[in-house]
Amino acid sequence: MEKRKGITILSNIFREAHLVVSHYVRETVRSCRGLKVNIMASYHLTVKTGAKGSGASHAAYISREDKYANKDKYEDLEHKQHGNMPLWAKDDPLLLWKAADNFERSNGTAYREFEVALPREMTPDQRLELVNEFIKKEIGERHAYQFAIHCPKAGIEGKEQPHAHIMFCERINDGIDRDPEHFFKRANSKNPELGGAKKASAPQSHTQRKEALIALRERWAELQNNHLEKHGHADRVDHRSLKEQGINREPEKHMGPKRVYDLTIAQASAILERRAAERELEQANTIRDSLIDLSGDFRTALAERDKKLSPALPENDELRAGVEAFKNSFAGKQEFMRGFEEYKQEQQRQRETERQEQLRKEHARARTKDNDRGFEHD
Image: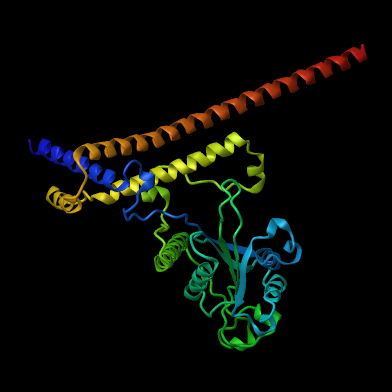
């Protein structure tokens, strides 16, 4: 009896929560005016290493210099900067990476790199401020660094995709003046001035590396969100995986220029429509989950419900219409995504059929040639 009563209370809570949704969003989730909901912006951070011999070429790539200069393909440089360089590379950071390529030990690392996505909602100056604070917190004055902010257009959607490449040298700046060759020698703990600059990287287990990366990703997300809030943007980022966030979809795969170029209009349109539907579904879920928190007991949930419901709400008929519009919109997006999955599977089956037919024709041609050769011998 108590269980049935609890279910009835829950049902009433959800029904009235949907009325609140309709009051705020009117006909669809997309309009969600007046409802303060944090929409998730895209998040990306990876840590990379560059082997000896790759430092100078990668520095030229991110700064769009040398063979990467004056080419349409690389006209996306928003800003470049360097700091903490040794005296001999103070005015030309490329000299540091060339020295690393020449004098670092044979199996050594020429550089480490943070590759991070930046919020497109921010202005270039705001993005630069964000990157500089990240460097200040994570690199400080301990390491020489060079970074570049790129802002290319997305291949399909055409929107900006701002991101930063932050290269830094693992050697620690200890205030000792060394020439390039001496800088990359093995460190001497007893007589530091006789050896090279010490490396910051210490041996770590797989678990330790994983924990350090997770902590770094969390710090970067927190810093981005602080800057988004500072500049009045509602969007927020989350360093957790989609699964950990409770989002039921596969991560988007990066599509390079060649793959985008090879897409048909129908394929590109389908991808865009699915992305839009997924964003609206995630927004709908966020709105739904933010209206009422049922993690506590029924008494707390009811108190929160009563607090959210305003006496100035529209009449019941209007509320019911809003609820129905919300349900139809939400169900429509789900139905579209199911249909899109079926479309993808059909496309795969069609490609496989075409491939099999091509193989059959090739085998037939091969048999014909063999028969012709047999007639020649006869």
